Length: 232
Length: 52
Image (cartoon, one colour):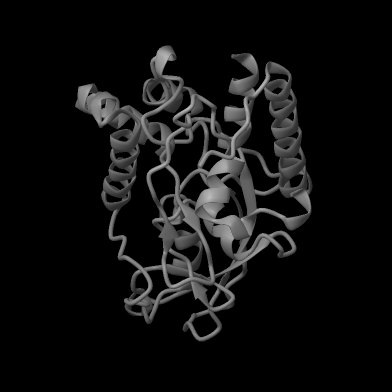
């Protein structure tokens, strides 16, 4: 449907204006200017920050460079969460641009996964896709795809190619009309103030008596605190 | 128990419109004043960008 495609495009092309600043205690040979970028909401921090790395490497000595990591107001940013999720979770009330601090030392081992190369991001992304398809279609769609199809999904994301990505992702989003939806809806509810990293449970798109569930139904069941009281 | 109601085509159309409007508002809020920023991923490697 044309309308749906417009929504998909708007979601895909969502951008967060971001200002990257080098952490004050990093040792530089000359002053490190901030670096400004539009980050795609639907991507991963370590996948889209080559320019940031290059920018700060220019003013630093080789021996002072360890793995780059990011922090917002004291919170290390998990690269394996999508950028849009990180922003909405930690910074949605902040004035734009989003101000991220860049570090090259003291990697917070307890908070972050290492990201030595893009292939680590690819493996993480593909495992998310597979997990979602296990819930949606018992993994049948992703398992029937060829290696090159998996690669197309990844390359679409990596190179910000909407059409390339959706030509393949379309198959992962289909379901038989008679079933009225996926087997289960893949979702995660992230919270900042919680011991649990996220809430993830089985949730069917249609109730046993045939009614279509809404996002509101899902939230009511999984996380009622998210429903504003005055809407009751 | 189920708390859902049947969804009419009119509701679906209204939601679709609302989602689209909210998405547009978000894009406007987040991107309108920052169009001069560099994109993190270059769309076409062979296009040389001028200074803006």
